[in-house]
Image (cartoon, rainbow, N blue to C red; front, side, top):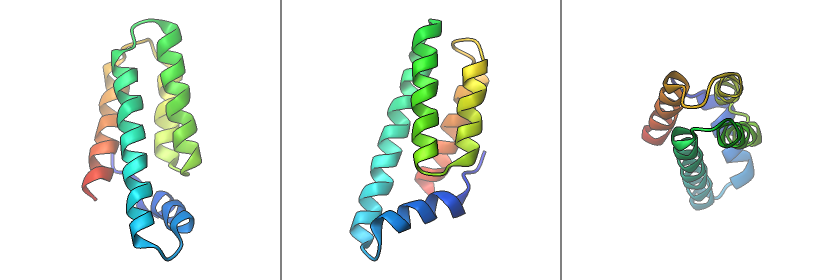
Amino acid sequence: MAYEAGALDATLAAAAGEDPALFSELRQAFIESLSSQIDLLRRSRCDGNWQIAALRLKGLAASFHADSLIDMAEEALDAAPGEPGVVRRMQAFLDDFSQA
């Protein structure tokens, strides 16, 4: 699952303006937050923790206009706790974004 470079990068660029250091800092903050939330989702075993982690992921994705990540978070909200396919797709999104 490749991330959508246009919307996400445009959001970061708009927030950073002409400051490449700020762009890099915002990008890193997004990566760290996404990584943390995926980890929480991965470790969630009860419905409540799974739902909270999925909602946080959806909020993060919405804040940065990451539509495919929003879709994955919605899929997680509909899935059973521990659903490995959802977590794998989110991790692939993170890996792709981190390497881009």
